[in-house]
Length: 203
Image (cartoon, rainbow, N blue to C red; front, side, top):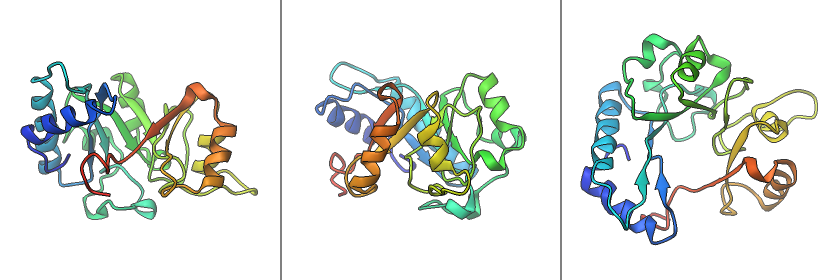
């Protein structure tokens, strides 16, 4: 959604509604502060045109800027910022409802987000924090399971009070890892996610 126009977002909202998706939190990935603010504004503008036959836009999911370079994935680390309240205020907007960040690098940001009723998810990280609400795309861009110590993935699997997203397309995560995930997590704490690739004709 970083480069999407209002028209692009509305078109996608109509298309995914046909697949039974009633609402979305469009994801903004790592970019410059200026481009991030522009993308958030565009998503917010698109939400004002909600109509029947469209997936409702509930708010923005910010999956970028506050990540761990060791687990950067597709994100450009040159735009990463330290996890401080001061840096968050550079892009702060009331339409941001979910923030994915690396909790092991936190310098007071998690507390601020929680105080402002923003959901916090651990992702692109090597650590964990009991204050997070859940995990973003479990396994992917996380420290892996270790039998000799803690890791982001292990905490996401074993913390029954936290939500955990999983990309269950058989490509991002192996079948065996999916079986472990579904055997481990309580059903009401599982969130199935995708990159919407078939819908955007990008697979």
